[in-house]
Length: 222
Image (cartoon, rainbow, N blue to C red; front, side):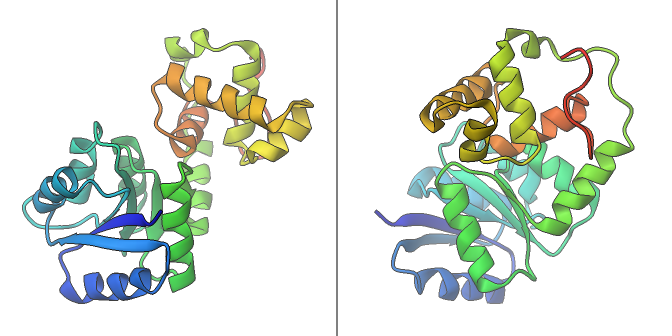
């Protein structure tokens, strides 16, 4: 089945470029375009794409607000923007974006990112990932962890920490001596209990709660 993509960007040339790249792939179909955030929301609900390529700065409604409004939609949002300032990264991810890619990415990186997000994964541009981690490294750990973490089993908490450290399901399975299918089940339950959409949001939560710190493992006592 083809991955159905909606392109939301206020620059026609950018939309045309993305369309050209994606439609050259046999497993991708561009079902529509939007020139502002409001149009992106309306067309997403109408056309039901699998992935929305969402610019941040657009007229009428910005990409962050549009992403928030699509929180109840099965469509997954991949933010593609020229702006890599920290506040855009954080607000987009907290709004529910499943990935963040800069517009200077190579065409093959864009195609790969769409496939990753469409398959249920999460993705951050390498430069964004390093800055995100540095930001959380400078942030003091909260005195109290979110109550939702108390609902996790010990195994699910282990899985959350390993997801936050960037391990794939196969790598987690090897580390915990579990079947990969079992790990997939644990990941799904962990995300559900925490009210998270995907692994990217799990990473953000883990760093915000200091369950993981750069160069370290789980927070002592967890």
